[in-house]
Length: 135
Image (cartoon, rainbow, N blue to C red):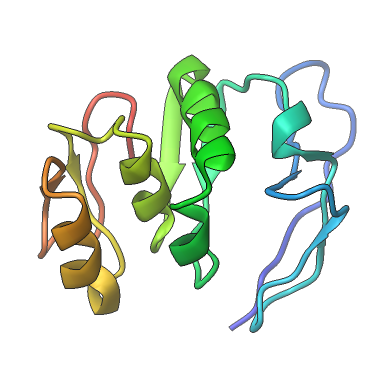
């Protein structure tokens, strides 16, 4: 499986996509994915209307990075919509913003993640959840 990012031209203010990096690096490359050039580090990111939190093996370490989790929480609180995929919900759960919220995660990691964050209303059989601003 591959990834495809469509280039966008000036959209007269309708949409702007910014790629963030958890570190100061200007690239992000998952072990089995496409190298992505990032625009800005998480620390320097501006608030967005829509925040997308991807998952992957790196989420296990990042959930314990207090500065990362604090900044992610700030950005998520200011977003109108927050989307996670795979184990990205682990990172959002670490912010405590999912406490009392319906959510799901990668099924192979479900028990591990649900046991770490029992205040989240984990939905084992759901492929996706929508609860307030969280998708």
